[in-house]
Image (cartoon, rainbow, N blue to C red; front, top):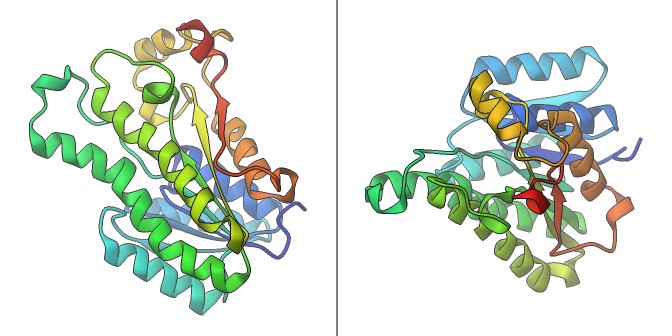
Length: 248
């Protein structure tokens, strides 16, 4: 078990990539805290993990609010007593339209969910990791913005690209505290966010592999970055994109 004795926070864990990460981490020995806004779905994932013999708790809240992250940190301290891994995964695509057609509220909602929420997360995660003797912080970004631009996705791309800079800053600031920070950049993933069948087929054809990733394939990358297998990686970007960034 690669994460035996470790504890992890996973935001956006009620479905999709976050759900798969939570299950895979628990299978590898981690005690996991799932967060999200949909309590019923969080309960289902926690029950699945516990039924398989894993340890899991959950916290319901909006990651755009700092009080949510304080509540998560308090729960982790109370239930687990340490924090070793943080997966800042929550996100949204938002409206798809040219940048000049956004109003400020629409723009800010996408930035807050994808970027500011990650800052609020690490603000409260890092002190727990320092007390725990170090840790691994992982952000879920995207090939959009960091490697290519897609029509109508300027707000999403801007927010997701900012996570690369955030990871590099954390690496520079906290490597002496044995805290690592890295970024996963998926291509299209077979989740509810991928849209209807026509949208999925369009997205799949952007990739060299001509398919979307399964959430478990992204979770495997998170497992690598969370474990000692990546102990000399920090401030790095890991593209898990089926070749979309070389085809577009």
